Image (cartoon, rainbow, N blue to C red):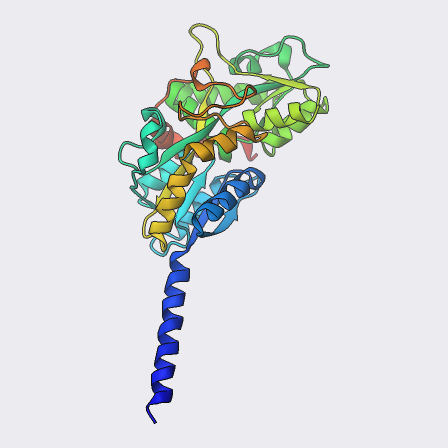
Length: 336
């Protein structure tokens, strides 16, 4: 009887086709952006496209660096399709190592040139800025420049996150690019000499300033705004905004496609969505106050307009090139 074999063949063909369809309808993304803010975006993408998302998140203490190391270790046999980073320097390091492949999304046209790679290795969206947060019970006139953190009147009163991870590591790399290595190393040593506290992360800086343990500190707009919205006794300002000042470092989230992505087509669709006005609007409306890079996105009043900020004038390619040297010095200085 041939019928049972024919039926079995048809069933197997259906199963194989089903598996193929299911595989195409999945995307794997490594996410450095806070899960509470990124998960709703990924869920909205699934609802809109029907593509299931498998996301891996990083911890606050090892933001960006842990995922970047994982992607580098998986090079040649990638598990992730997309890297959603919450800063840019580590993304550039990965691109330089060949971990990422170019993808120029049609949604990238509206993003300013300074916030995307010319060859499509990564595209920025939904930026944060480095800010000074201060306790309003303890401070009436906060430091206005990051250089103020080395002044005697602030000795023992200020805090920063350990510059081995996330945006603080990128901030140091940006100073390496802007000031040069020697001046930046002196600045970092002067921070320690002025008893600036080195805490586990930007959220810890916010919390310790809010509790009154420290008068002020360096953190990001999302963490600072969270403290304000929670009713804590804090406010924040953009540093170095005076005429001739270096400006505040504005850091975009970045979306990038891995080299050899197992689900490249789905990965490209996810990147398109992350760069969309819909995604940037949602991130701006969240308490994380991500600053839209698309000038057509109307952000709520609590979110600063990109054009209103004196931004640090630094090429992110230079920041990425300085990242490894900055990390090496920071490990030496702050891991004592």
